[in-house]
Length: 301
Image 1: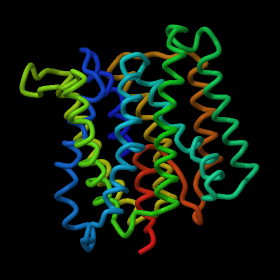
Image 2 (image 1 turned 120 degrees about the vertical axis):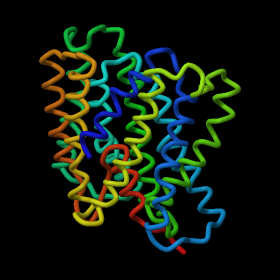
Image 3 (image 1 turned 90 degrees about the vertical axis):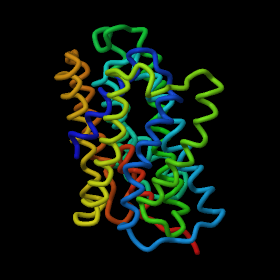
């Protein structure tokens, strides 16, 4: 599971290597996710009659958990080393804590604050020394990339606060992905970012398809594991996803990193460990884990 999610970051870098722009990539990614996960909703619990509040939920989750963060993800995938992007994507729990405190989703803890400071130190170490990034000009893209986990953390806290109105995780994600595809389709066409997968299908397009299919299948595995091991235990996959993202980037793309990046990675993983969710508050983990944890909650009738 961790190996699969970790693989999606270098695949995204390959998908953007020929100049494909975010909205075209996001549309097809969401379409593939719907195609992979929709059949599984037949086995994911009792169907719920959809009401207007469910469609509002789909739009909120689509914007904060897919469309907007993926815009920043794909924009920076072509600019930053994939391994560094993997590390940055793991910071969602660090953003989740202050948002949770502000929204009343969690209580203050000095230990978790220490974890947040560890994560901040990791980001600073990654961008401050001249030897950390291959090019100092990449610094601006580091901050741009951090907007993606910030949005993931926002999504998780919003849904944890107000729930999913009785929908199970699969139906919530399928509905949100469908809403995201509807939102991005006209934007992709009008902005000239449309991608015709039947025209010039090559390695970048194959990477997009493989990444989307992997995303859907591994998410299904995540749902299965949560049902058997619990969301708090399963959320620890954050460490494995990050590690595999770095390893896959080294193996597939030949990336190598300075000692500052490795120390930054250690600081961030330590920070994630300290701010990890507690059983009573099941709070944020990376992208899919945060989304699933949010979907575990049910809203008022």
